[in-house]
Image (cartoon, rainbow, N blue to C red; front, side, top):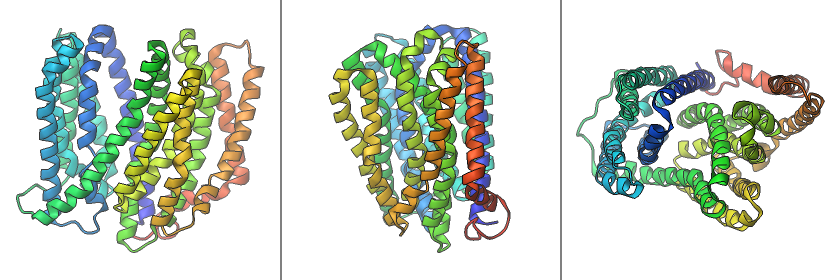
Length: 485
């Protein structure tokens, strides 16, 4: 089976698992929210922001070294495990000690217990980082997908049972710990490797140096997510912050469902091609050609139907978020493509340069948003999105250099999807105007369906090469599917 075959199968498993996981998670969230109410959920949110931050720093940080390494040894695996475990332990202890002051800051004593109870999940995730990296390196995405689904099911059952039994806000803690524990158990049972004490200072330094760069990248990614909310809250107030947050949450969720399978699978695929002596740049170009056919119509379509979708899902009181969502949708397009480029850099062992570019997005975004604040929420959102697009060319130049290829093919491969998407968007706008006065659900359904049909026809007419490329990757054997593995 070629690396290309493994890539397509991995993406299929991760996509199926991701969508299923999110659907179950949403059902559990709605059920528990109805049982426990908004006040208890608010208490969880106060504690969760710190837990999520710490979890993000131990998940896919130091362990990324094992995916990029050409031929990791036992010493490399042990060094990575103990460095990650030490990081997780340090963050868990920091959360435990900071829980009291954080609760005092909120004026909610129960938050102290919630943070301390949830801090154990940071250590649990640290313990499972290396097994997950091994599964990714071996393209065992079936296990990773089933593991994620099992986690949300077990966590959901535990959380709902506790909520019905009167445990209140602690039901969320039980759900969270049950989910993470299930993930840990299934990850460890799927790999043969076990940690040992055999390592050297050289291996620790090598893994630690790469891990420090990736930690800087993860911090930059968190800053990208949190900075707009802080700036909008400080300059425009709570109403604007709420409208922005809903728009971002929608785009973030949809981006996760599209970009996460590509990001998770492409990184070990790029690394595997390099280990086999192939041209990882060729695989990057193929993935870029396939990604554009999905990302362009999906997110531009969201921008076009933002107003009726918000009205249908959230109600008329949220229509103020429609122009924000229309602008924010283009950030989803950016992330869908840029995250694959980031995976390419990490697979090449070049975490430092992509980290610098990500912090550049943070800095430029902050400056542009402060300038745009005087013109309101839509302007400040547009400034944030513009900062990413303004620096995008530098990402293209970086991946082109690492892939030993020209920049223009990477840019040009998106031209036809962009043109087809523009035609699709125009057709959807006209159909939406024609349906004015129809029931809202009919308007949304027909608009989306018409967009899908128009883009599908244009793909069959002008982008059959993308379909042939997809089939070549899915078909067993050698060929465009990449080097044999």
